[in-house]
Image 1 (tube, rainbow, N blue to C red):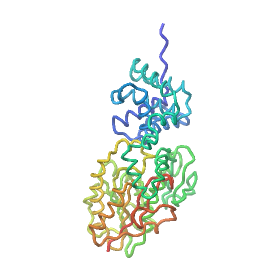
Image 2: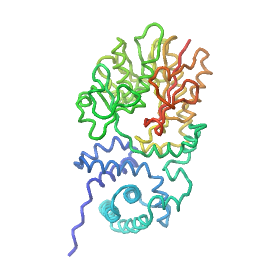
Image 3: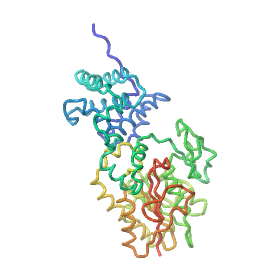
Image 4: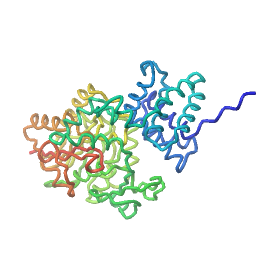
Length: 444
């Protein structure tokens, strides 16, 4: 008489499903997780476990693949994808979570048995027993001594790009890479005129006067968030909106433009700030679904509307905007804490197309900006090709364009000097924000 098969733990199954969706559908971990948790009825500690298991496994995939490769007698590309997903989940439990060895192995083997077959389950059992033979430090000493890319689970090209971005402070590279692997705390933003920071729980953010960092819990349960008077937004993104809104302009100050507004977080804060001054913001977004997100996030006082349009051909007259935000599409290498899958999707070849787009968008932003107004170019990337080099090219292409001091429009943010005079560069390891780059530009 055969024994009944053991059921798969719902938290581990949810994490497994997220990994598959990231791999197969190019999904985003932070967007997939809420649906997976709801589908399996996970709350509290179980939800937190599934979240760390999925996000942590994807963050540390490069490290775990190096360990698994040392435990498997064939190339990882020849291991069935579903089995490799499960092995990575098992490795994360064994090497980075406080899960007893027998529980990590047994639950992973059960998962493989149900989702694949018995043969794959036996293979997974043997591999994970080898993984359990050493702790993480022991494995790193064996498979990649001194290799920062493997130790901190970043592609080698990303490590090289971040080293260049740190410039004369390259000794901070290990700290930066480690910060990319720290799960970010949830930061809220109060939208001026609709909520105050006092309406938000948690710890006030050190640089943004609108932010608060949650100590725990579901942000959707905060009344101000549920009512749309506040939202979830990294402090670095809040600083971008604040820098543009605080920059001095001469003359009229009524027409604000967000040239790449989706999904709407910065637009919502800018619209609220505009409304307080009797100004209004128009958002531009190429994609229909993202334009709807902008309208939903920023709707109400201060939002003139959302135009679905290509930002490189914006439907505005020359020199018609008083303030322009260009938060340009980029590699996203400054937000690896929140978007762990980005490091595995981006390649060095992506930079060429992105820089071309960034330069075209910045040319259009310069066209739309009136003399005496303010233009903020921002990227969620510290990579020099996307930051200093794009701005330098624009200054060369537009004789009337000049670089102003972005830091002067901000509260004191220490140790944030950018690669060009007057620019600002935030860092996860220094400021606990995404690595936002800010350049304040003006036309004459």
